[in-house]
Length: 285
Ligand SMILES: NC(=O)c1ccc[n+]([C@@H]2O[C@H](COP(=O)([O-])OP(=O)(O)OC[C@H]3O[C@@H](n4cnc5c(N)ncnc54)[C@H](OP(=O)(O)O)[C@@H]3O)[C@@H](O)[C@H]2O)c1
Image 1 (cartoon, protein in one colour):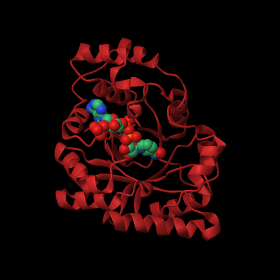
Image 2: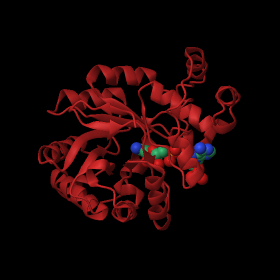
Image 3: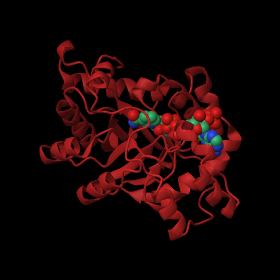
Image 4: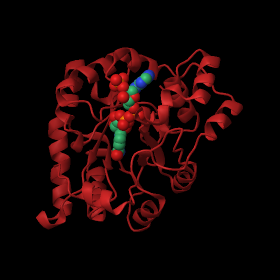
């Protein structure tokens, strides 16, 4: 498996398995199937409600801990309830306990809302204590990312953001590259929105390589050095999504995909006040 080297030297597999929206009772089976298919990089979050099932699958697999790369995420801590620094550390240890692990490979601030500066200071300490080999953020627009970098000690290793053919984030990626932050895509298939799987441009490129649209999309991002974490509950698709290292898109095909960019989210805008408030009102620890 190809990997990227993060800004602190940690190696991160460029392709992993995401478990968002997999029901807790289905997650252990799905993750066991993904590990059997060959995935060694898993992406979960406190808010997904399935960390314990991910942990159970890891345990059942018997795969050595050092051969896995496990990411989880800290949800927005509610400041009035207490100290965000302490609450963040408590949330982290809750996640570790649910996962049945001693450390995670990557710990992310899930959303750029609330007192994420205190969250980041807790994460810096967890990193120094060896509990999170790398720390990073998610859903940060460049302005907030740069501000966080400029006023803290550790530069986030990763920013996990919505990235797919209809929202490509090339300028964000360039900014992040300049600051030493690895881009990671969430929603690589845009969860099928905008008829991604039957898009004529992607379908023609897929046909030219004898591959599926999903494989072309993942390959396109890997050629752009974007880390990808596709989700599927179907073993045949898990295997297909992993099989993207045996072909190369031409410059012309890469450019054809570049032309699909709309420059806008297909999900929601992290700068929409109603969405900021809605997300900020949710509680996970
Ligand atoms: N940080 C964040 O805020 C954030 C937000 C969203 C997601 N994420 C992370 O990113 C991961 C991936 O994003 P996502 O789960 O939202 O969506 P996604 O990976 O873009 O799309 C998943 C959808 O595509 C289908 N699919 C998967 N492989 C396919 C294939 N080869 N052919 C046809 N359909 C296929 C799946 O269906 P089946 O399962 O039925 O195969 C599912 O409906 C998440 O699981 C999560 O780990 C993070």
